[in-house]
Length: 190
Image 1 (cartoon, helix red, strand yellow):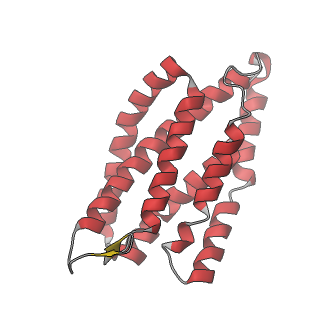
Image 2: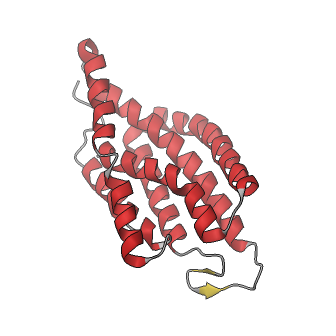
């Protein structure tokens, strides 16, 4: 489960700047502001997410974060400089920029909480006497598929000629991680 949603998350982190530049025509200042917004919201959300994780457990937190990231990807697919979901905007409209900043905040918030809750869930599944092995496998599984999302994005972008549509493969990748999460025991193996 985590192997797929973490791969998609890493791709989302990596493509933010390229999307901003290619689709919205952003420069360094706007991209830097986007990064700062994402980092600040990640810090605040991790605090809140930790409290929710303590109260509800990591599995519902993970599911919620993956759903937020799916919504962000769908939003980005429908976002361009001149339109939002096919609705034309007035020339020079700042709405696409505002939407992308909100998406950055959501990526930072959901991404930070997702990573933390995933580690909490891993703790529940790790044998205390073999925790290093469990987390080593967790780290390896995250690296084993790092090619998947970038390859899918590259293929979709090449096939469609659109950076927006190139994001489409992230939705099923996130959805697959969410689907596989169904079979993960929230109490762990202990």
